[in-house]
Length: 455
Image 1 (cartoon, rainbow, N blue to C red):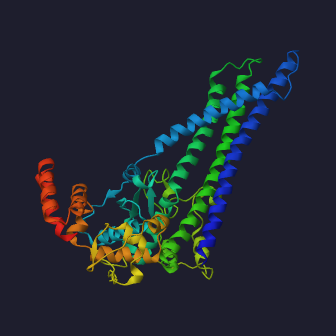
Image 2: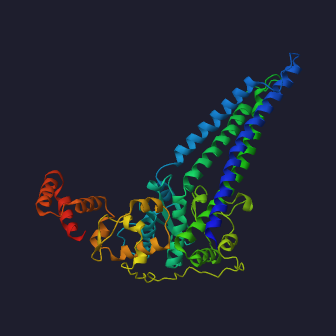
Image 3: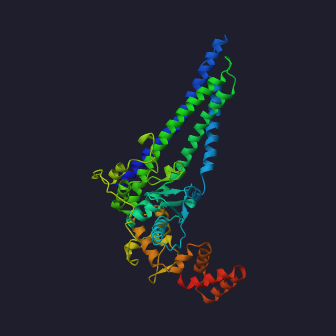
């Protein structure tokens, strides 16, 4: 699979579809203007007045202004409603927050995989939620990387191998890194704005006088028809954009992991499971576009589906796929956890400059201090690859347990930062600790003293 070529194809298709969405809004405004202008020409002729021309700059100005206000306000309201904390969406779907120090082996494996992706990507470790559902599915939610969360079903957590789970998480991180969630929110906002036209049309139709000379009911019919048609075609374009972003996320996941078999393996298991990726929850439809695999069955078929067919996604990665899915039952392939592979952190191939900058500056690993290359760090941030993932995995395995635990707790992370900043000179270090004792809590100082010898 040439994942770079597939990424460019998906990005190009997405861009063209977004432009088409914008042109559709412009066309909607033009049709609305022509409809109103034609109505006014007809009414003035019937009343024997001087006939108006179809070209009326003043009318065009007011139609464009009114249409922009309706669509703009409707879009803004929806965007404000949808943006923000992805945790709200996870909770809406019945998700349970996984504690970073969970003792459940399957959840530990999940947290390790997500943490590896976060370190390799150079983004904040997202909160992780588990949905009690036997289907194989996952999602990323949140309007920006700092507010993003990852959600997985119990089926995804238990039925996938570690490599397959990593591929699915790489897919979701691709959505975060490529800004797909933000794009979805904006498109949903525009759809809500177009819906506003239909709502105004219905109001005009139902609550205005239907006298022969009153043009408002006719205007209401026009707005209702145009708003409804615009909403239909808008949803169609949005679904097409979403399908292209899924192809992009698949290609990016293969690029990140360099393991196409893991991605196709996860997709094949979804196809072979009776429940597939269908989410059994009352709010599943509202969040269907967020999932790794379509959480619903589209009533209008593939043209309105937010996800490409499974077979098409697999063939993009493996052209030799014959279309047959293995039969999968809910019997976890890992009764506890796959054996975590042990990587040699001291190997030069597993110590890229990117990872050296992602971990604690100046941290001692294996007795040698890592060099830090800021330029390389900036260039590779948000572009994880197989080497970064392997290094992140090895780093987590080798990291002292107390240091690892501290990164999962706000107060522990604060203590860790202070511990790294303490001077090596005994006199200055004593001074720093005395200052901290005066200005910080005893618990924080105690934590600093515990962590400092280990950094």
